[in-house]
Amino acid sequence: MSNVVLLDFSATWCGPCQMQKPILKEIEDEMGDKVEVKLIDVDQHPDLAGKYGIHAVPTLIIEKDGAEVRRFTGVTSKDVLNSELSQLL
Image 1: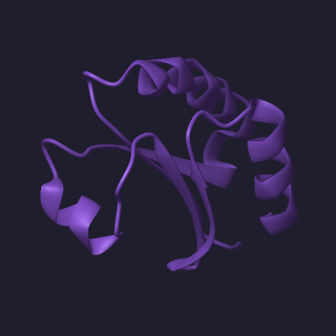
Image 2: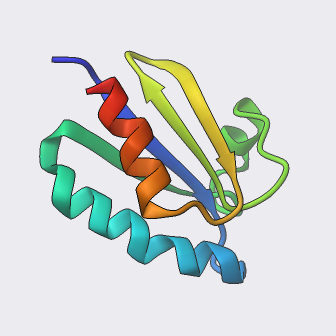
Image 3: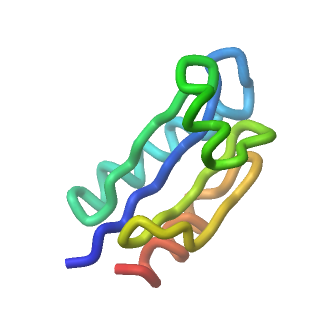
């Protein structure tokens, strides 16, 4: 089974980030163990934000087997994320 991870780079003070969270929760609930969702607060983990070159939040990165395959900046719809993730599973 492939390893698909959805990284959510966000911040508590970011309004759009708070709008993204329920969408990610739905994806996590629906996809179960097929996709690992990791929430990363850029203020608490500036090292990771730097490593991934995060310049705006929210930024979502989809990785498969440790390699970045897709990146979204701004609030991203559930339909778009489901479509991208389904292609990788």
